[in-house]
Length: 306
Image (cartoon, rainbow, N blue to C red):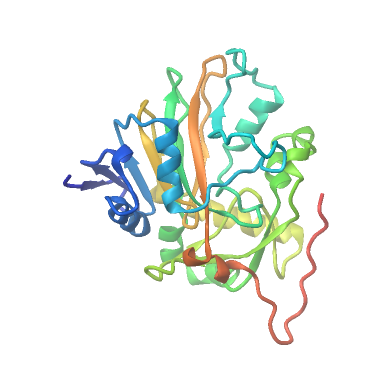
């Protein structure tokens, strides 16, 4: 196979042609895929027809598969690929104000996956299975490209600081009732450095998410204002790629350097995306992201779990 690429935007992302993802293995094609991932942060593959099993194999090449419900199942329960979907088990669709739909609407906020977990995600490998007649795009924003040209004055307000992340925080922005559900309160608040350096190429990216609520050195009101300003800068049109799905498309993006969000669609129409996250490891720079308290620095207390 001969791989070829076409830029998705001037700043990041490429469409990759000449590859069948079902044939990718650790020693066959994956080194090229991984190199493109490190360099471009987002990869699009069209016309893929691979099974759930192949989807799982591909995601595992990036790292350990994330399973947010591991504590809820039986030891012998088979892992099922998570679906981003408004379809109930009986085939009907959820209504607009159903809590499940409200959770989907939380994904319309700019975020990186799993910043609220003790081990965050490295990558999302996502493919379209069923699509509505309109809407339902996925948008990506490069926090690496934005950080590279961010004004020094704005950088100085966040560089070298830690940011606190909480799952229920993003859900509370949509619905207080949603935020109280047990699934959004299983993990304690996580404390990550604001900038993630890629250990392969040394390029830095701002590590943001709608789950972020507190910046070290600021009160919660000032933190909220700063996080909103940083998010607005990183999601300017110049740093954004909007993907209109076709069945068989596969998007892969670097959660360390790219935020994303969904966009609305008619909720009476089914939409099913199969989404697999692989967790970051020490080799991906995770060790550098844990906030370290050194010397005589003021101790930062963890906010109370809510």
